[in-house]
Image 1 (tube, rainbow, N blue to C red):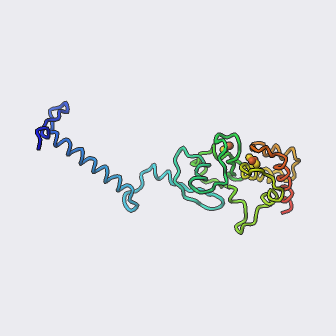
Image 2 (cartoon, protein in one colour):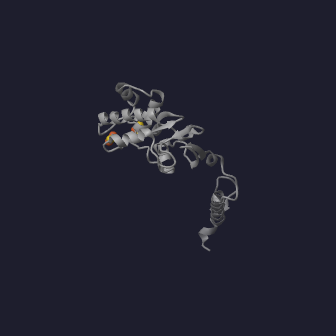
Image 3 (cartoon, protein in one colour):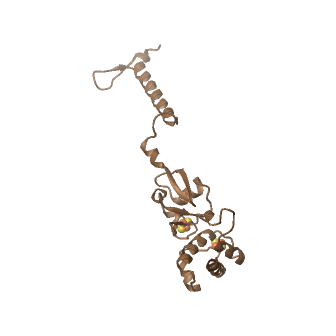
Length: 210
Ligand code: FES
Ligand code: FES
């Protein structure tokens, strides 16, 4: 034992303690914190703290309930892509400009990069992965896009498809100009707009026939 070990540590009160006792107290405190952290992670013990309970939420995605751990500031695009593996929603601008991240909430198109995931609890979320039938049969709009080869690189395709789907459900027989206006919230970097409109026009036709 060195002389230093028994030096007094003055805490500004009359309760001066020795350096040895002070260090032992710190180590003991650390052990308690460490044990508390471990205990907290153990699934069979203490109840989850309130903030973690809030992070584990249920989302209705493509007709299925998905449990997911979501941070308060997390966007729906991030949750879909990086937590649920639904990468059809593309991240283009990440600031509500391009529409490549479009998904449907209760049938209405939204930029998922600009929607906080916590705000869509209880809503029906549809991504491009949810459009085909369970047996893999393409939605008529998807079939038209394939038939017309409507997109060049197709980065923007899922966003356009979902925006067009929502529009065509309300306006089943649009003019080309009306259809263009209906999907004007979506941009195509390849500037393939004529081909896209050809494909969506054929999609409207297929949907009317279905
Ligand atoms: S990535 Fe969402 S609007 Fe561009
Ligand atoms: S086809 Fe390439 S971004 Fe639209």
